[in-house]
Image (tube, rainbow, N blue to C red; front, side, top):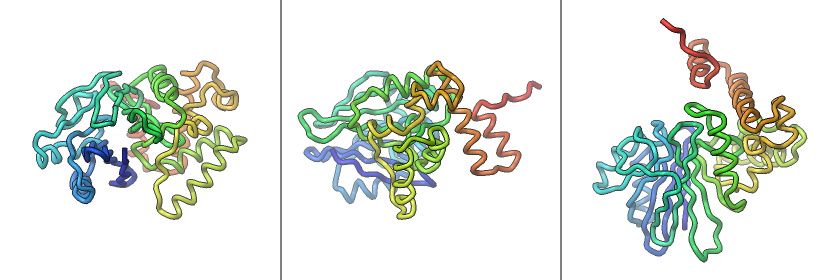
Length: 282
């Protein structure tokens, strides 16, 4: 299994997963189809399937154009809002592409229909991989927009957090620096956060991706996977894991807005998206 990391748009990642024996390829989160097809051609592979993590435009907007250019392409995901969807997947469903196995993991939180994809090969020394979209990112997670804190806790800690620690984490965005700066605020005494942040700054200076990480690493420095740890609970002032997570989400939103001051109109829109305000009744 070979994974091509493809930076697109401002800070998104698309991925091309290649089964090296059959030369079949699967794409994840197609935002810029022509860029993807350039790499498909260069690699000399046959693209058969698109796996989409969620319906947001920066992860799914390329599906329709790609399907037009490649008739018969399968576009799979768990949300009917996904553009050009050909079949809706369910939690726990398994797919296979040559020697590559795929387990579909419903991970609501960022959106209600968010699906992550766990890939592995039998009898292979290479570690498995998870394509986590905006559910789990390096050092953080996506904004909770459509689901409850309890659902998001289950997605992060019980579903993704229990995968094998050697699992490579391929996320949807390059948000690592901001995530780790927030993680350092949550756990200023965490040496793993400090070391990863230093590494990420060097990668940023060299204009290099910070993906993939591994799940084992994330458990050491990602506060959204560490909601049962005493320093994280102390930071939030909460004890129940879902309440800790909800408090972290609020603090992360405030931290991001403080780091990047917004115009009042944009600030009000983001506050609404983050669930910090509600629209006025007319």
